[in-house]
Image (cartoon, rainbow, N blue to C red; front, top):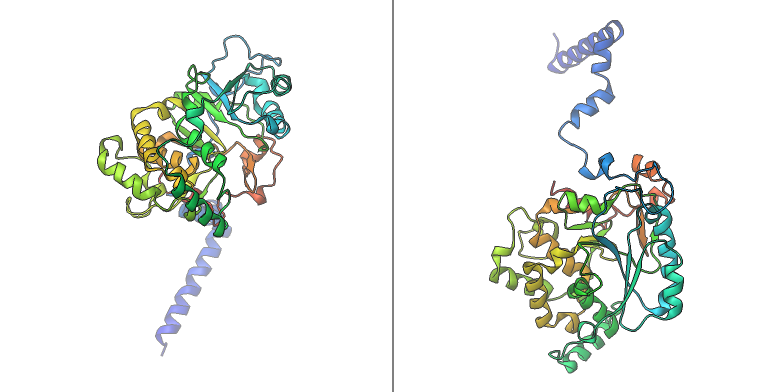
Amino acid sequence: MMTPWRYILAAISILLTLHLILSLTHETYGSTTSLSRLRQWGNVQQSEPYYLTPPDRQYYYNETSSSPPPPQGQRKAKAAFAVLARNSDLYPLLDSMKQMEDRFNKKFQYPYVFLNEEPFSDDFKRITAGITNAPCYYGQIQPDHWHQPPWIDEQKATAARLKMIENKVIYGFSVPYRNMCRYNSGFFFRHPLLVPFDYYWRVEPGVKFFCDLDYDPFLIMQDQKKVYGFTISLYEYPETIETLWDTTKEFMELHPEYMPKDNALSFISDDNGEHYNRCHFWSNFEIGDLNFWRGEAYTKYFEYLDKAGGFYYERWGDAPVHSIGAALFAHKDQIHFFNDIGYKHEPFMHCPTGEAHSRGKCGCDPASNFDYEWYSCLSKFDKMF
């Protein structure tokens, strides 16, 4: 008499024998039930992220002409590179510009706008202009946009900086760093030299660009109504933004009309806005819509933060401020991950993998890609789509 286990084993044996016979005698059956095909079936619901698909050919450089400027009739956006730098940044900046020119801008010839709290030296202007065939513009930042505003209690601000020194917070005591964060958060897009432009690509001294970019990301932003583009996202230091989210929640309660229902709140909060998860786009790389920052929602948000004083009483960075602004006031599909732009700002690197790496002739190691390391927030971005 057969036990239940023997019945089960006998049934499995019969099924395996039938599978083997059908696989050997019917080619279609064998290919349909192969492990690779079964894996494909298991992934039917898992479509690839949008950013793995190359852009439409209309955005690519017209290769019928190999010499700058771009061929007659090639469409361009009203866009520029935005560079905040000092005279002492000249040679690290030249390295960044040279890579940008070789990998992208020698084909597209977008202008550079250089901004500085002090006048640029003649050497800075001559040498930077000499590395590109694109127009270069040089401007000075007006003092009230750069320096600590008069409503800040300096005694309170000094105490906060001393506390950050004790806690070993990077740039904890630096007032110029705070000036820069405040300027990038609320003023750079107002500079007269950037007024004629609709889009910008932020470039900093000493960053790396690893891949050829043969299409125009500004036109992607323009045509698809994107407002913010990034390559790296990660968590912010909690010691630098202790009251940023509480202040943001106050603003959200005052102005719910500024937040579309399909925004990217889930990228920056895991509990529907109760707490900030500290995810932000690393703003040393940005391709953005200048008019989004100039708009009413973000302008009022920045002014609310500025009056609260957290840029000086803590060390609010432009990265979390921009990220929260984009996540709250834009539709989530207006935020774009530029997967095929290989980029590094020490110590983190985005290096395209797979087909995008070979398509861009990238000079970076995909094994060092930061995208899905434990400190990256890209997985949270992916979950929105």
